[in-house]
Length: 304
Image 1 (cartoon, rainbow, N blue to C red):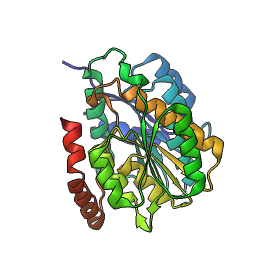
Image 2: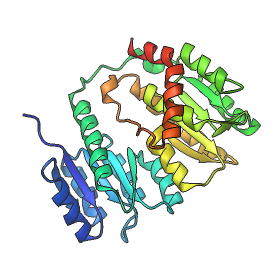
Image 3: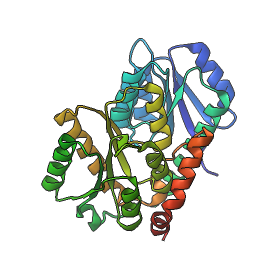
């Protein structure tokens, strides 16, 4: 019989920890810590498949905690509880903590239960995935698709591709992007949220479902926390990089994405710890469903 999934909840309010423990102790082995530093010490010595942290704690923010947790136990799935007002925290946690999912406070109990169930299923598949030998494909160049027509972004991505020997792919609009994605393998996607006046978010959300291994870096001047949290949960974006681009930060994000893409090449599909949340709004769900239909050849290629 497989060992139960272990979930570590971290919150400085004991009342909240007691409530979470009571709610989930029947399905999982629940651990709780009110001190984030003690939580990190436990990660060093105990197996934990999922860690759920509040953002606002006096000793350490949830974003900082999950970033350190990633270094200690990289395979642990990380979930952050945060408010809509915490834009900086959301960006920090995404860019340094590798977040599986965000839950906004006050959280919905059914949403929390559903999210933990998804994370537990991924953790179980990950534990059962075979360890494969290092592949020669790790040395192969990556294909980078750029959905942004600004010169600064093009220059930075072009330089990254030249230095790394990667292939740069460009399109003028979303129709061309769909054709290319159906016909060519793409490892990294660098995109603004608009291309030739068209909204790109529905495509990002569709790709998160059709191609979980595709790593998306969003480069945009927008600063809407609610929209960002939806992008992270529903599009599983890998990095959020603000415009105007800061060259050092941008290059760091590209390098991290390339390293992750190369590592995933040596792993079976079931080991990938990504699962996009389906959009809740009917209109958005319809857009994503329509785009998934247009990405049929991509899905056929990936499932072959």
